[in-house]
Length: 360
Image 1: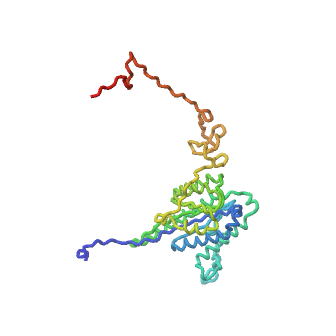
Image 2: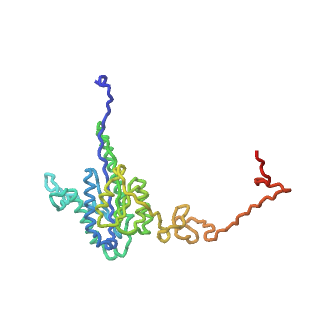
Image 3: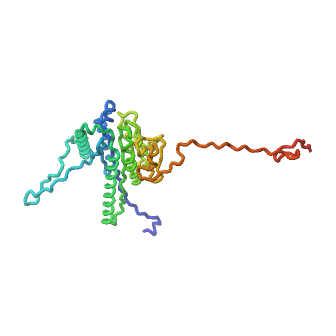
């Protein structure tokens, strides 16, 4: 039949959907939320974020999500929540039936709500309530949001999920070699919802996490509801993410759904929001101040707002050569060119003669 048909036949393989893992970091700084409490309370923001999470999961059954809280004194998991290890259950009878003591109770909710959405909502609300109740007056004395710790947790979770999915895909391919199904890799990205200013003391660990995300091809998106998120602008620029500054925090759901719902694969076919200006200022290693101009160590690239003591780098101890820093520059006078004088009435080269040119 192939000789009669004379047409080319191609093998068509099936492709699985590319799973997307979205790690959302919520800035839960109590002082920052109290400042915008009249415009957007924390409870309403959490409700809008849960709607955004449900929309992300509804795109594909393979999509995953995780939520992390960046608090003033620690970074805590909101979902999936960490549970304490339980003792193995003992057999209940001779038939081998065991009592499932480690099984979690189903979350209360309406029968019209999707079970996975209800489970995530119950876990996030429980974790947020536990985090707020566990915040003491001593914790409120610190105004620094632990953003670097939350970024580290998100990157570790994405790396673990990617490795697990890659191993499962290799096992599935080895077991069924005749299948034409192509297993796609996991695409992870991080979304930071910020309400506070960038803390200079968090510059070094935050940039370390940003460079790790750029190396792992993990995009970092940011929705800034309040404050000056200087370091997050650099994070979005270095990782190819999207930075959105919300002038109206009460419209948080509109910013999430229209600007940040698309993953890195879908953005190739869309026109993503662009940020006109990026603040590339860095924080000095000596005092933690954000500086425009500073001194950089040529060995470890540490930044200082002023020359360190004894001209030694505070990070690596290298002796720095400052040269003639602080001295006034020397102004060299410009040399005057001497004009050539004519010899015996003969005009110099390049000068016009006094005789007229005869007409032809």
